[in-house]
Image 1: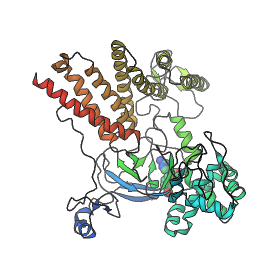
Image 2: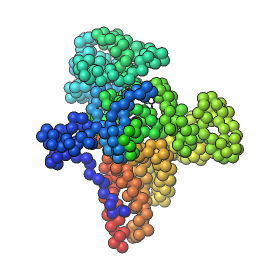
Image 3: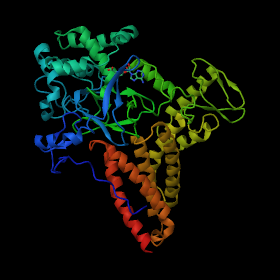
Image 4: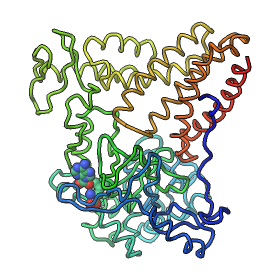
Length: 524
Ligand SMILES: C[S@@+](CC[C@H](N)C(=O)[O-])C[C@H]1O[C@@H](n2cnc3c(N)ncnc32)[C@H](O)[C@@H]1O
């Protein structure tokens, strides 16, 4: 171990036949590259066994979904899908309609008046729909006066970009085949909001009327049910194939976005032929009640995955309370409005009391606002009431891992050592939970491994110079190496646009330094 501390090279776009740099891709899987059609033809017999590792299936409960058509290894690309539509999120501050970065009103598109961050952005193709609809119908420029606060005028942009697909029959068909849950939206009054926020604005302000209202209601539903939020550029994207992924709170795939905003879906764990391939539509670090609420109100189904059906959430006790009688753990009662009961001593917590405990600690959690000593105090006090791994506590532990890192630079050597050890302890505790709830190559695991790995390396660097080449420091180096390798493997899959990718680069640089440090220890 130790001396093998080298990151693996990134996937390179080279021809699968001759190895030269290649720009063309297999049109089915979009993954394998070729330098020309002849090489693609030559490779087909071999490639067809690997191409498209999934099939689309349909069932009455899930609708369309995706199954593995062969065994998949962790990290293997399942699909790479270009965006059908990209646009600002429905709820957003004013952003440049070219690149989506926040704007202050100093620059506008010279043709339509929608805010821009630079004149070049008004030439971006994805801005064309709202630009043309505004020019042709409103006939005067859009005027935006509200910046840095949520701006409801933007709710029309992405739906208009969807409407513009009408002139491309194939893409329009792909869009309109997506699940909209239009009937449920009509019943839940979601369509009333679509009417006032989107349809009335398009008709009243942009003076555009040449569309079928039912189409636009459907589009609003399609965006809510199928839209992927793209971190970094803060966009929402619709993807013709990736939208077929079903939800699970213990998803077996990961998704990242490249610089062209293609979504890349990879196996997070080993997946067997015939297994359902799933992604998470919610934040897996939320508690069951919040996940379920998000899924029922925005995706219109109740999740029945293994995690949601287990009161202990796969043995993590992510939602459990401490029993005041015996100190055991009391998982939530999954039957709505029912009392909670201790499995060890049968003590009862009335439903209303359990709700109140969670409300009180939830309020305390939101008041912490990044304060280290208050966060530590929260952990100290809550351990008598909440399970060690209750999601409120894991939330605080993860925040502290970041906060302690920022404090170390301005601390004395002995304080810095204590902070690093605390950061390592909290990071390790969080990783245990992450591994149970987000198995495999989860981005969060990569980020926490990065923090813990760098902390071990910092501890090594704090040793006296002569001690740094003694065998006693090997455990520190080994921990740093293993964790940074793991972080690199996961985070190097991110787009170069994302902060996490920069962490992967940093991890690679640190691994090179660790390799040198190992050599010094071995020589002694
Ligand atoms: C993004 S779409 C997935 C594709 C969709 N099944 C289709 O046929 O187009 C999300 C919708 O699929 C269904 N779905 C996805 N995961 C599900 C799950 N775990 N349980 C029940 N329904 C699910 C729900 O109707 C959900 O609103």
